[in-house]
Image (cartoon, rainbow, N blue to C red; front, side):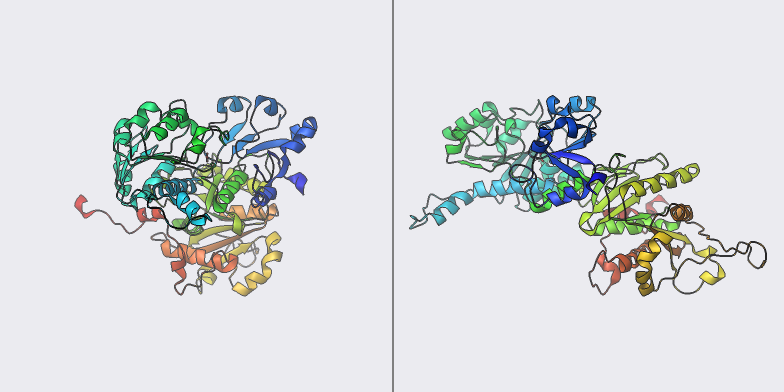
Length: 571
Ligand SMILES: O=CC(=O)O
């Protein structure tokens, strides 16, 4: 029911607003109201709006609009740059500001390379000649500059800048960079980049200068007359950051006078430029209309991120309506967590947020699923939520032990979050001490399952087909017939498994437990076994590999796990 969903204000669908192809993602989670509709009756609609999703800087988060939204919790910006938002002011209203970093980096870095290559090799000019009805021959003047082996200067070596460097390495470029902070030696070596403490040195030496900085007071007008005059006359300026980083009047002069060879800009100020702006009529300028993140895959990722960033807000029920949640119990051998690692890594799941709790031992660490040094720098917390929206799958990964005295409270928090989020089922991946098995549990497969009555009906056929064994209840007093005849559930080493299962039965929550009997040690084979069982049920990965484990992608962080041994040099 639309009424269940949080009300969210957007500018419009289509034209300059949200792309029609992705708005379905938002509609799954929100009741959308477009600005035009909203403005017909702000008094009626205003109090219902809990979030505002901005696309192409709109709706503008201006005081006049925000004052009509007394229930607003979040202003979420589609994109990484939030220079158009007055964050302290918005925060002062008790409203959070969110953006979508990370997911835009690849597309933006690709765009920087596209502009660099297109400008260097005169791709647009070539195209125009090729399609011109008057063309009879290819003019010799259509002569580009060599990219391979040239020198690239990256200004702003953040997430996107680093990805530009990674791409440029493939072009055998000499890579210089200037950044507020120098990167680690490992980062530099991985892409072969050299740090230029002085911006002037970078400008002097580069054949291509790429701007990838945030717009701040320090970077406004960063490239002006002086900086352009330091560049080589054969050099090209590429801007994928913000138009205001470049003094456009100075750029026009430099391009006209041959101070630099060319410019390729995905961003200008304003956007679009007035139709009579001199940049538009210069032959050595290539301009795209701020489309750095415009790929279907990237905008879908942005939509998913914008949709799920509300999960920690209690005012956004049913954010995961119809999703399956998979989570580990923190149990013997950490088999559940390892299995969840394989899921997140293989399905390339996006981090949607964190589960806020005071029941886990506080900790923070690097991104366990990093695919490059750059990603590894992200800070990760003990309980995080990942999603693969296409599969309607969410995962809660737990990376820290539960504080012993808070186990019950943790279960309560979990159950209420699971209920509020609208998951259609929850699967807990767990394990139990092999050596404490009851006699009847000794034979056959080490896999067991448990299922709550409210999930049983929906899953009975699947379970029958899978042929799994239900976890046996064991007598409270083995050998004593009369006393306490009711056999009980016993999951030694299973952490919160039993409590969570019992709570879920009481709360009518559709939940299943999949567990393996195992021993502490190198539990990687157990993790593979458990995730393969899960996959046999949920069909998350359909690859028909001969070798069942080879379809899973092992996360980088596993290199720190078992098997590396103690360095012999210690003895
Ligand atoms: O311009 C694009 C962004 O800020 O992500």
